[in-house]
Image (cartoon, rainbow, N blue to C red; front, side, top):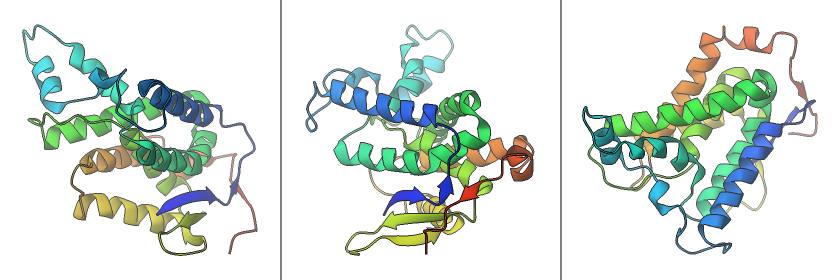
Length: 227
């Protein structure tokens, strides 16, 4: 299922969210030499491989360049469907979280959530040589923050084989998303990176004092055109 929008009205321009979406899309096309489909040919060596990162962290490692991939990998995607899903989630949930945290902090936290997500994946499977790419871990942090900040918001979603959009409460949708990562892991998907990012996003809100502290003076305004 894919989210389309939430029922929260943004009063500030979500500059960071839009910039992240534009950057990810630009790099995706650049990576494929401006074709929508096809293999990644430009930035293939910037994907993250857990075993290489672990080796780079060892004392006396001759090459530590693999550490850079902890960040570069979160701006690369495997295919068009991969980036479409990630960007829809970022667009739907990033705007509200950016408005709550403020643009500068949101940008820094986004990178931090991506880093924690990658670390979680490495911790679970440190010997893996499989390339890991995608913004899903960082976006997991966005979802975790949204889960605590705006649990009662309504989310419009598209579900396969259902001819019309459905509406669900944010806490239900995001709670199910998190449980899916834990109990129904998919082959070839970095589910623990998703879960690690989600928990990092929740931890950020809690460290900042919780929902009331973060939203003090900026309570969300909701539209009334949702069921």
